[in-house]
Image 1 (cartoon, rainbow, N blue to C red):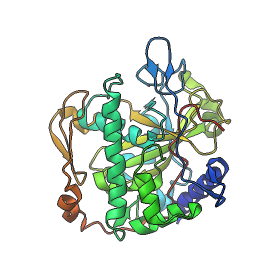
Image 2 (cartoon, rainbow, N blue to C red):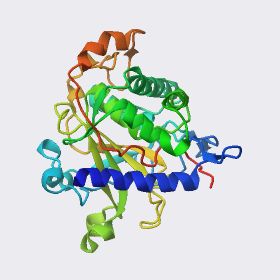
Image 3 (cartoon, one colour):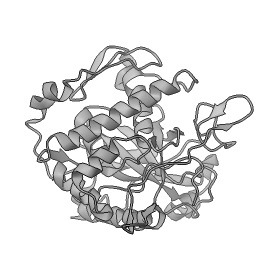
Image 4 (cartoon, helix red, strand yellow):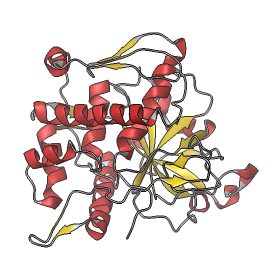
Length: 352
């Protein structure tokens, strides 16, 4: 019950902020699905930047500082995440954070960047000739997420712990604030620049059969006043919001993403948005990924073959991917709590 309470808490907080910040159709007075429309490319005088310029971010998007993770205060008793991702291990493994383009596709960019690392064993390199590749793979993840949700409405999806939900119920929950049908939601979510959220994360977690853990910014002083700047640590902690796919899919290395204020890291702790409007990639420091073996793998259920070569993703996705993969999902029987769309998407240069 505590896990469901946590999910509902984030759902309520997200809906409140979405209503305050999203575009509203003047003819219907209903909020529209969030999207980025004013994405700008910045320059440091030498090369284009795909995010807000900051002295704390290098040209490859990595933040200079390492960050400490903490569990949610609701990860207690039966609702605590066990096994390799138990909360006692969080603080012992610091993480690096990496920026991604803030063009409304940041959820999918973040997951692409993380997946490249765990599958290839190397970080994706931001070069001008590689950005097209990043966007192509992000589009693929978007398409596969929506297809997975729409292709079988009665499909049972796994969240975390003992929580599950049917795809149809998940989409209907996501649609309710906007007055749109599930079909309209899926048609819109297929388009670039519309912000992906909870339903798409859950879909990709089940599609890839891989955990996806989500964090939020949390001022260090609120966690422990005595450790606010210990050893030069950053003034933020990353508090774990959800562990989608754990422990069921823990045999695969987890992907980690941060839902943050788009001004981060140049935002004062305590002054950040209550719910994030931009996703970033997160990498535990010192953990060895399964991709380190540099071998050819197939992402189960994803229909995409990833050739393991350093610093590159080679994708082959047959048109009949879901027809070929459908039998793999017959054994997936789950239900999910109504937590769905924390504030996501985000874009550089957000205009209020």
